[in-house]
Image (cartoon, rainbow, N blue to C red; front, side, top):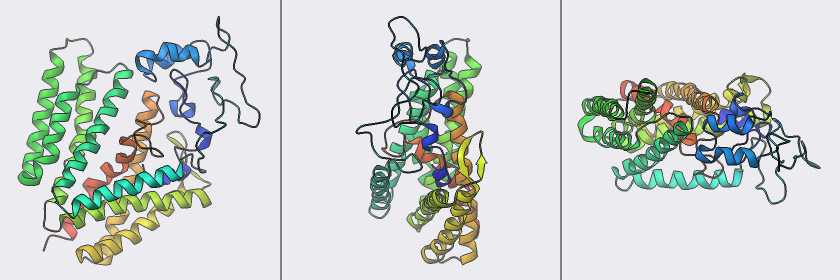
Length: 366
């Protein structure tokens, strides 16, 4: 997730994810309410899957149902419940979070582990990095399919995972031709697979399946194209590091300077000051990385960094609006301090293709 959300999605004002069936604060985009039907509305939006009705009853959202104890709107020393779900403010031994709502120590620890996995695989057995990509994107696809399923959208997981594997592995040897062919076959299989499950909801489900085949599967297929050249590991480092620069620059600028909201309806606390911090970090980082790793010109690296910050921010906003539409705060809980795999991949996926294209045009392989 892009760092301009440093004054962003994980802001304490938005509140932590509630229990099953409870609202998730403003992240739900107004799909859940505080009235008697809150538990049922939560279930219809896939917030708790099959157990939503039970979770909705336990959350105290209705406030006055039989056998349900009324939950006070606020707790001593804590903020009021923002949407009337009855979810008490975090107290006791809850993990301490920074001003952005992140568990910062956990987030840093996860970032270090992920960085070690990337660098270790790239500079030992180059192709092993594709295994890291397969795992990360596979988990991300599973998260999206599960979230869609809770929303009543049926997306077939096995052909998606198989198609993604073909798109991530094949182009390393077969280039763009293999990537295009693998994507086309994946779409055909998805449409056929869903056809045998009946006509009801076919267009809705098939459209969602093709959407996931593009995002994240097809976009991830550009990783092997970036990795394949002799200096591929250095190119991957430039791509990843530029995106991380956006995250770090936006994080600190958003914390200390953030005042003017960028997109209140999509990501309420994302600020223009955070975006400026991301831009500065990306342009400087891109210029240095391209010059010293790929022997390119400083201005070429600055162009890569500028494209990176724009695309990383857009990727973050796109995932935010997806989550708002289906009424969830995070795609998962796999990565402490970060959320799910897709909450880490969103900016990377949107940055990947432009960085690959710019590096191919501006800094061709010697």
